[in-house]
Structures are given as structure tokens and as C-alpha cells.
Length: 401
Image (cartoon, one colour):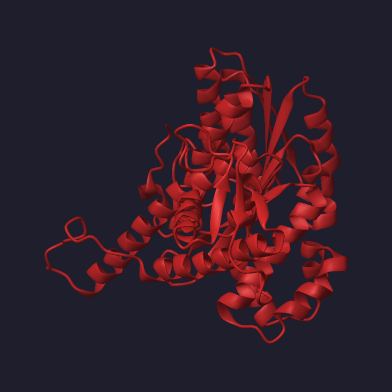
């Protein structure tokens, strides 16, 4: 398992959390994929490097991804082909990327192509590269911009529609939130590109008059909807990554897959990344405290603390997920567990343990029952033929999703 060294991310801890997320996901993803695919093609659409601290570039997304995939190949006894495509527009960053790719590709037997260009200019090249791979080739797309432009929805549509395939997008919530709060002349075109011209008006209409977390939730949910519809993904979800020193969102990681197993792996990676995020936020707070007070006994490892803002978000999204879950059950009366899982776990900071706890509580209240449990089974499983049957009252009110 790759260990993320957060000492390399001082002042940019959110990037360390993102890289931990990517590492955790690929670590679990690769063994599953190799069970039925002979080739994994990793595509990094905004490769960098930028702000890296290590000379060997081990704190970059492309290095982390290749290391995890190489480990998966080693575990498979070498029976896994690895391919990679990197795009970077900055000349100096591209030079370092190209040097790394040429060296690593030869040493690690990875087929690598690079392009010095804007992503939107190289969509056809990426699609061609993916499709040129051998049969049973699975592409994983990582779209990690430094802002909110350069990956317009219509432009990346051919990438999203690669099937099979999955996508992880860094949705720069902080930038987009400020854009909506303080719109600048000439930026409407960029906003339309982000969501798609046909969706832009609806998004702006929905956020009109909204503030704070309510506005943020709309921006993210609408982007999830756009990604799901454009890519034909059956399952989408978002993970929130907080600013390391302030109680606000830095970005969301948006995920799309066509397989419930992909969603399961995403949520597992999210849980691990959230633990690290809270730890790093505590470290940053301690660092700020040390700057204000010197000579005091350091009790950072002695006193367990809770991230109040994170806990408030957990409560907020837990209530949102429960409302969605109850709405689905009340309206449909009988829902396959996998369908309920996908609907509820679209919500950030909501995990299968939460879902099962709510099912247990509502079952004890006589509101539902689980059909399909066999033998010693006590809880429904994602890969089982289990259904949740609502036995409580019918829909009494419209519940906002």
C-alpha cells in the first residue's frame, strides 16, 4: 500500500487528501478490474506537475497512479497490461512530465503517450489511444484542473461515453461558488461550457436566492446529473474535500461508473480520505496555534478532538440521504437494495454503514422489512437478491432531493 507523505503537502493539504483518495481508489479498483480485463488505461487530463515538493515527483497524481497500478500488475504475476496517456499545457511542467513518462514507461513496461496541449484539443487523441488498446481494455479518466475551465461538458463527452470506463473529476467548488456569488462579465460562456448550454439556465435558476451550503449542494447535484446523463453512468457520487484551515469546501471529487462495485470502491476510498482530511485539518489548527502560543506543552497526540464542521456536514448530508431514502421507499413501496444503495450513497459523507443503520432503525419501528434474506443472512448485500419493502404510511409530502 502506498503511504501518502503529508510532509510534502504543507500548505496544500487538500491536494494530499486528493492524492490519498486516488491512491486508495486505484488500490482497490485494479484487482477487481484485472479479474475480467487484461489492460488498464489510465488517462490524466491535467497532469502537471505543479507545486510538487519531491524531486522524484512522488507527490504527483501521475506518479501515484502508476505506482498503484504497477503494484496491481505485480500482484497479478505480471498478467496485466498498463497504458497511460498524459496531457499538460504548461511548457515547463510538460518537460518534467515527459522526462518522467519516458523513463518510467521504459523501466516499468508501461505504454505511455504524452501531449503538450490543452485537454480540449486532444480529446480525439485520447479516444483513439484508448480504443487502440487490446480487447478487454478498461480506461480510468482523471480530470484534475486547477480551475473551472478547459473541460467543457460537450468537449469531454466522447471521454465520458467510453464504455467500459470510469471517471474521477476534481470539481473546483470554491472557484465555481465564487463565480456564482460574484459573476463577472464574459464568464457566462465558461459556466455554460461547464454544465452544458442546455443545463446552464436551469442551474442558475435553481441557485437564484440560495446561499451557503444550499447553493453549493445545488451546484454539485446539478453537475452530478450532467455527468450521469452525458456519460450514461448508472452510478454517480461526490466526495467533499474541505479547506485545510477554514470551515468551507475547497473542492468535490465527482465520480461516475456503470457498475455498483465501482461505487462501493469509491465510497471506501472516500471514508479513508475523510479520516486523513480530519487529521490534517487538526494538524493545521495545531500549527496555527503554535504560531500564536509558544512554549506550551504539545498535546496534539494526547487529546482526541472532533472536527465540528465535518460533523455538522455529516449530520446535514445524513438527513438529506434519509429524506431521499424515505421518498424512494414511500413512492415505490418495494426497492431493490442495490438501487437504494446507489440512490442514497450519491450523497457525500454517507456510507453503507449509515444506510444499514437506518434500515435497522426503521425496521424496528415497523416501517419496513427486508425480503430475500436467506439462511443466516441478517442484512442485505449489494450483490444479493434483496429488496426493501416499505410497510409504513404512503407518501405524505413532497421531499426535496
